Image 1: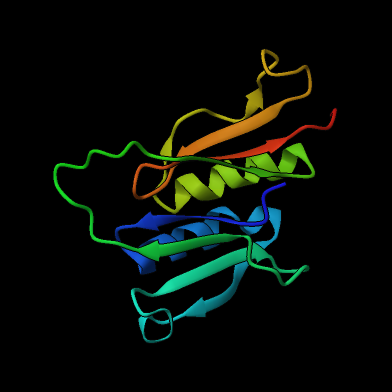
Image 2 (image 1 turned 180 degrees about the horizontal axis):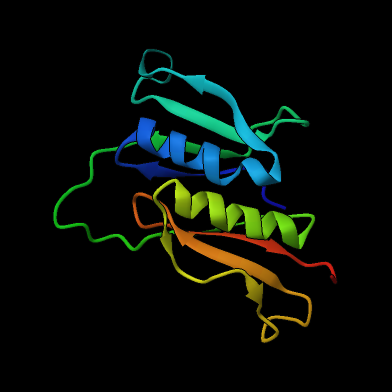
Length: 134
């Protein structure tokens, strides 16, 4: 089981704002932040389910080297309801994300796989998925 994960972003303030909006429908928010004075390298923000008060998704600002040679990441967050998936998609697009798959069933994964995909400000493929039947 994965305890936490993270990614590097080109603009921490911009990404933090985007993720706060996009992940609000599944109860995610910023749980803790550390400055570069504490980490020794860069500012970081830890997101998680606010009701649990545990950061499990971290981001840190990093200057990309050109040409960018790393592929974007794919990260999927679990939702309890299909309505949360729909709301994630709406909020992520409204916050400036780019469509990479409208909310809907993906029966090739399994009959009740309901997900939506949006590219974040750095081009990472962010998904919210619900596995329970309607």
